[in-house]
Length: 283
Ligand code: 2YC
Image (cartoon, rainbow, N blue to C red; front, side, top):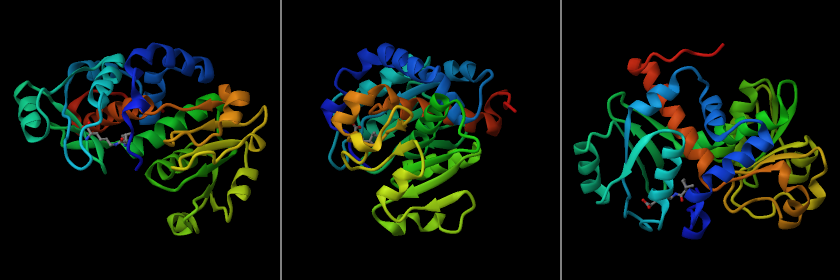
């Protein structure tokens, strides 16, 4: 998983309103709405979202704290209506502080795992899985529907895999490519999945692209046209700068907010399924 750098998220908290407007212009739906769709529920989830208190605990393990990361998570969760706080202490002392200040949910990330836990419902939401679904739901909203269409997924890590499964669950066929073929082995015989032998083959298969590699410039100007739509959660951005100049309005990308918002809704859904809320399932 790519580790964010401080300047990837600098000032993001102050730009949430703008990003939300841009997302609504691109897809017709805002950040919270897409995150809720990705989680598969609507209804009174907002109610649960507002009820529970979230403690955000910085972790010093591994490469340590990323300046502004916890504060940016706090800005995103607050923006979608959650009550949350960043603990003054990191690590175990931070966990103690969060629990003693009444947090029912904990958000924390080390270099390998970024998770949101529900302490009462005993369940968790994973950033990779939820980022995949959140960006897939955004691409689906932008495209209107993916039913009966083919979607190209580049990168078969946790994000790409989660997105691929989401697209198939929404009636699409998926052509998936990873430069390490063994990462696509789980899809070889799977219905509605086709493993591409090359990047070119994958890009030729569709005009709906989901870019979840850790490489830059995976999608170039030659790969795009007026009807290409891209969701690109990959860090760094996997669409080349000249392609962004020409077709940027057709590319959905952000370094953190769609993933974190999708985690928040995913966790409320899981808690609700365990009886911690009366949330109605949409048909
Ligand atoms: O500040 C802290 O608490 C650090 N331990 C946070 C490290 C986050 C590492 N993960 C990432 O940078 C990316 C994020 C997009 C979320 C998932 N991976």
